[in-house]
Length: 402
Image (cartoon, rainbow, N blue to C red):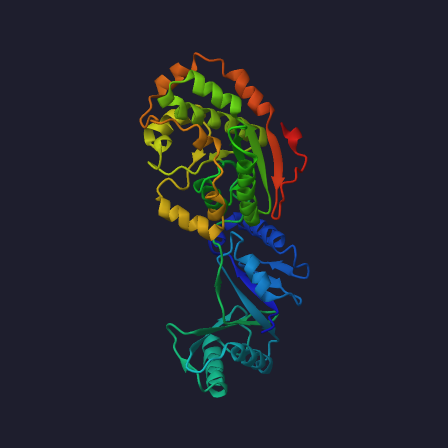
């Protein structure tokens, strides 16, 4: 079936009252970016829904791109008919013919925003129900759970007909929730946490801690590949790669082993917070799930969080590993995350990390070392790259941000 347009429905955006226009504009920009390869598509953004005029573009390919755009509740490929009954019947016949199978059930759902049209909604339902039964005798009516729901929407400019509703990604348009720093390792959890925050409209920059020669270039590339996968949702993500070797070696040499993980996380958080401040972010995002590992107990989080007043958002906090893996598989990050290239978090794990560390103790241990210049050198050595879909590891020349 050659469709003329796609009707996009907003969902949660519709609850935004006076701010709705800003959310709609963000969604329009998100859709425009997602459909950048489909230059003929024209976007008509209204207050209650959006029309994407296809102008000959393939509706199937466009639909694939729309499924990943946050802020879309659902959408329907549709055809346009003039506002006379003959044209509407011809359009309805062509549409039903494309999906007809003997034995299927159907219903008519009429919507009439223009009250001047010659038939009311009951009249449209009755006339077109009879028309479909006459022309497609193999169909049966089922008004509760039909196989085919033929939607006929009468508006002032035209009549739109559709029979398929495709679920969108939901959530809020990217960029409506502010900016945050995602602490990303090479594991399964942090990319999923980033995805969950993007679904709530948060624009992300990613921070990764790299400890050569203990961690390899393949481990670094693995993280770039994960960020690239996330960029397929957002369009692009700036990635800050922090040289962390000196910090980790100092911790290993100077902090008691069972407190080394707590200290490591504290300095990671401190450095991420410095990047956040420089970049104008409002929060830090982690992939922590309560009780999953030693550093993710409440006692550990309390001791680690002490280094910042910035909100630390943990969208996976109540999820178990099975739930997280399922999202990672759907997102396409799981197979990358399980590649056997270890990051600095796994290389330097102590044999018996403290699960209930005391904040006062870790502060006491840290006080014997002059960490400030070491942290400053790590921040000064940050490599910053812009990752986009299809990114091949090339540096985009953003190192001058730090």
